Image (cartoon, each protein chain N blue to C red):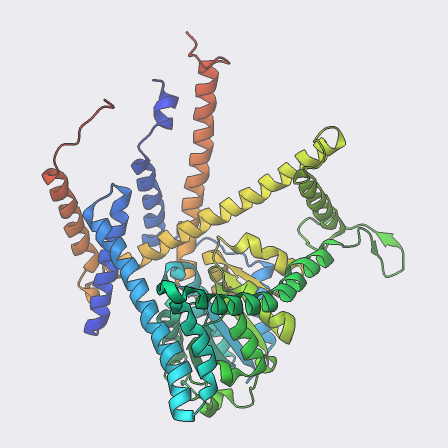
Length: 281
Length: 250
């Protein structure tokens, strides 16, 4: 067996180890590589920045703990920005398994920013239906959510004063890990009730959402941990996403090198075997 | 540090390490974490659905506010359970018919509007722009999604990919060229999707490692270090105690 063949049959656990080292070392000793902000992330940031104080911002955290590493930093950055702008924030989720985590994010960031539940923000929790839920919210918010996550009647919450339907919401951002998510909010919400919509998503579903961005169906898109880091840079508040960017770059570099090496070794084995597949003597 | 936070850190650290052990080989620790994940997810979902749907959206409005019209959706929903009784299983078709009918009615017009009409509208873009003086111009900026060059790339991409999926004529001559161009565009799209997937998976790894580093702190009782030692020791013990596996392909 030649060296190239041995390399192509290397124990995959060695590759796992290489990736683990490439992730761990930059996390322990960050070098602080520069972060360039993309126009799609700037789109969400600039729209929130343009909203006057007291505007209504709805954040739908449509993910579960499996996508927490990517979308949790996005949620934290968006909430910090919205609370800093003194917007009236409404939180909810379309994913039942993400309810507790979404509540935790809201309460932690609100406490950090000195905001009070019911007065400055409301967390509505989860309700079934997705499409029909969004349509009901477009007709009557209080019918869709008669009570919030803490079982307080939503009609009595001061933060929701003057808000009757989704038409009264100035900006909706869906942080999505799949369906239900950004597309549901567009199809059943924005297209019908004409509010402005932005999105945040995991890296896996980001390529599928770029057509919506280009056509103006959403006005911005925060993609994965990288997008979260860009948002943290925009609000000038370093968080977990920015801390993870060095590790992300290191692992990407390692994977690119592995792909190149694999191709080189494969070419070596092909040339040494010849056109018939037999090894040349 | 509150006790429940420290306990949560220990549970999260332990389960993360248990799941990571699968990278070495399948083992009982991985199985434990896997089954716990499934069980906790299902249990959490059942409790949340019961609390939200049965208690808050049905029971409380009916009993506290006298909204007895909710008996209609409750009745339709209950028909679903008729599937478990063979003699009256046909009743469940009423509920399914209602769901399919309402779902289709809600979704079809909205989906056509959002995914087809809007996307077609965005695909058909002018290939030449007009300057402020009224003359025609062609913008070459590849990084600008609104440039004429990108409109041309989009047009070629859409048409060639459609040709690739057009099977009514044999792919020879100009059709073959168009179909092969379509393959090129598809490969670029798959590459971009794979690149994003790699980024996403690495982000998940970074997220777990960030937590593991945080939980190695003395405030959490150095959960990561202790549990790492315990996990490795368990793997070694299970490896030593496991009977020899037969080798060879006979």
